[in-house]
Image 1 (cartoon, rainbow, N blue to C red):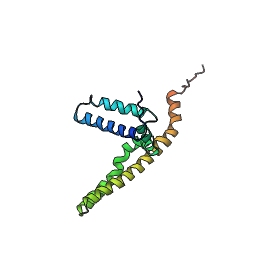
Image 2: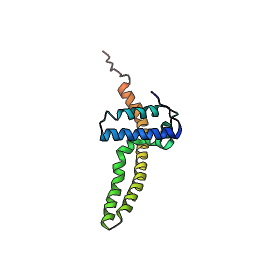
Image 3: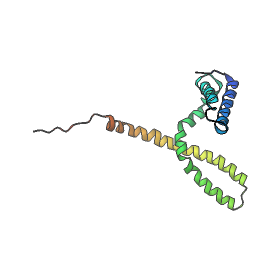
Amino acid sequence: MRIRVVGWPGLLAGVLCGIAMYVSIEYAHPLVGLLPGALLFGMVLAPDSGIAAALSGRFLQFLGKISYSLYLVHPFALFPLQVIGVKLAAHGVNLWLLWAGFAGLGLIAALIAGTVSYELIEVRLRRLLDPALRGLLFGVRREARYVA
């Protein structure tokens, strides 16, 4: 089921369906969230709808590509900023300023760490290990021949 709502009305409809789905799941019953969720899913499936066009932007596609690496490494990227923030707060630095700095620098640090992790582990290490593992797991086993 594809629901084609083109342009900014499609983007607005997608965002409203997403909000309705969240509110339904969180404050009503999860089954109530199925209707706006199905509508949102139908709009995302239609390639020329507004929400699908917004989600197909280069930056969001990049975030989707590195999302698992970003999920795994973001605590390691944010921890040093938390330690520094606690020390600065103890010295009387404005908490709103610290929060803004943590949000901005944390986002940048997490994106860099996620990108590096994706590139080194998911791309390069996988490219290196895939042939060896495929041969090991799916290759033809050589049987030992005994000469009598």
